[in-house]
Length: 406
Image 1: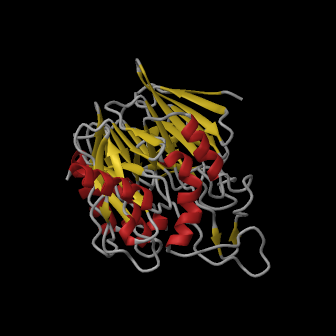
Image 2: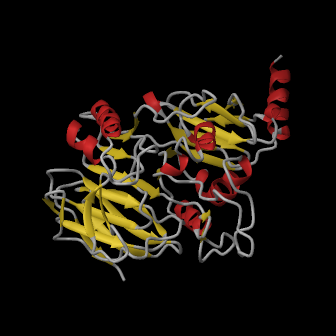
């Protein structure tokens, strides 16, 4: 009987036609989930967790237009997961974290990136550099799918799939992200491009860590992903309005989510920054504003949070406030068209009534590498070639400082 079971498991491994690398994502209540996308529903592979077979099961229901995903919950205490020649380390503590966001290739009406030009859309190069940085964890702060419209007639460089379907998700995320997907476990945040009105099906079926209900919710419950002593709260702001007008119901939603995390987390990961610097129009000066979650933050006043990690603006920003509120990191520089009009340092400015003690703003493609030091977490901004452009020390502390490396 044992020989038969072994042969069956081995055959399952050989027969599985996998379309993506196996990846691991962190979910609620300590869950570690292994997932992979396959060609047909009967090809869910068998992985090895610490050398023992771990059978994946079909994630159901499979949406129309999507390839099936397979999933397995890792046994508690699992140290590594292996499939074929690829082995993913499951860390018990975090010392190096890669943060990236806003990674897709924009194809929408007149706003076009050349998706086949790695200079204009370098997410594949960024993902390769993330893998080379050997992180313990990768955090994606949202916005995966930007190929919303077919390539316009006469345009060049953007031919290919579009819309909320497997082919577009493969082209915009899974194919270029492949080197990083198996480099370390991931935390995925939902972006506004994955809202109920946009590419929500692929988000909920492939990346959301909860069970799949076969539909798209406006918001998901917040959850806490903890590794070692670092507690990371994940907030869903995907449905937030971007018009900077009052939205009382939205403020209540975010206040409720933040209240559930208050006193229980060290960092918060979401898509929309709580604080940001942006232009209000093409001719206006750099303006300090609160982001979409700001009214909810003001109402909930969550305790214990030291750092907020977001995206949404297509650049890198770090804003340090001196201790009365968390510092803000914006890592929206992963590949989508950059916010080239925002290009100024903001130390000494005022944001929502509070002086900025340290601030940097860089509109270049890349990712953020966080590493633990004796006095807190330090940061390196790296470009698509892996070069360090900027360093910031103690980004989770009241006294951060930043220095250009160029």
